[in-house]
Image (cartoon, rainbow, N blue to C red; front, side):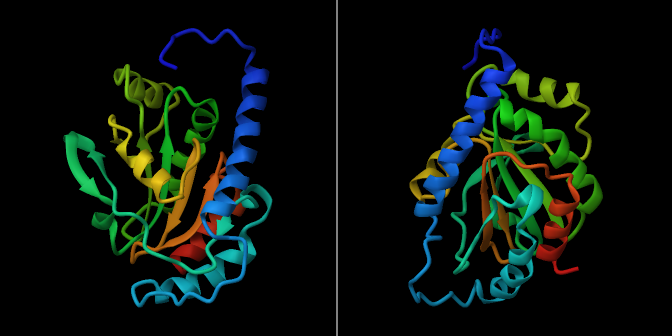
Length: 217
């Protein structure tokens, strides 16, 4: 995956990525508990997320129709990763703001496709109550990450990374991730509102409306 050459045509690679995204969608629907039924109580921590889910659910259509909205919001695993300056941060450090938590890598073509849209979403909505937290899990040729972001003109996103890919493994073990990209909408208490396996147009009106509803504006 670290090779500089891609021998398959871009269209083939994109179709392959789309197939993986569909498979991821089906897999996460099972792992994430979206099959319906069950009467497990929502924790006190995630009680406020119930209202946020009610606002978000009707807006999961169009460009964000693949969002799997949580039926029973629960705390997301408190993973750690690098912030700018190689500072180690945890998801819990973002408490108090709604976040769109995205896992990506430079070798993932759909990830590369959606990165400019994530940057535009951060430009429009980023602030004290919302942030796009896009974490690179590249484990080799680490210099490529910033070179790629610079080459596509990313300006608003802060650079987060996990060169150990431990974040991916922990979320995979928790049944939240089966492939890249994966994006998780998280409320200010650290509770999951929904999960998107595969890419989306995060700069679309559909995505903007959904994110705004999650924030509670």
